[in-house]
Length: 232
Image (tube, rainbow, N blue to C red; front, side):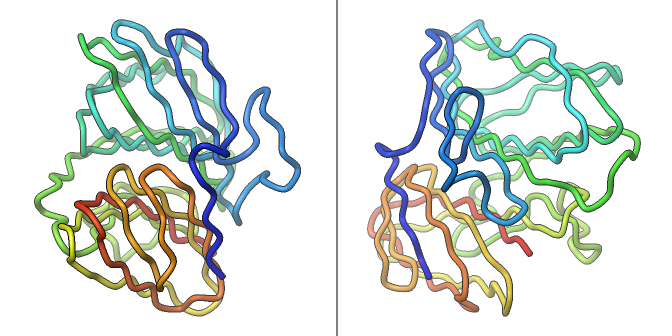
């Protein structure tokens, strides 16, 4: 089953400094049919104006992955962490027993991010934060694991969830595969491009909800940047 959710049909909000689209119910947007996809609770497509951002606010027991599409985001939290994550790179915050953080675009250009929240399978643990570069060129033609709760994914940022966040870049006409496996589900968004997955076409920023498909075959119809969450 592959369900394409067109970008223009997503919920959203425009706050001047923030233009957000919500793949699932979030803040003032509520759709009882789109509360989550397995343990995936939030996928927000955010555009943050220059020299603005999210002031300090708290989180608890949530895995929060930020994928930077354009620009950069600067993180600061109550643990004393501070870091700047650039386009193509990823940061992960395990909120655990509780943490407060801010996320600002200190750049002179608009920053565009995917913000992904996954419900953890471990609760009440000490919070943590980390970031890592994942050059787009190193994911050319095949998926690379960015964040994972699986012990074998040693090069990925760790999360406390039975999930993986993976990404690939494909040139127009190029194909690749992803083995999802039996009983797993996925949610997929292209940061850019146009593609087919198992014969179903989707555009950049559309949501693609997948289940009961053990192997996914992707073909790029234009140069494409894919981000996929693999979930129990």
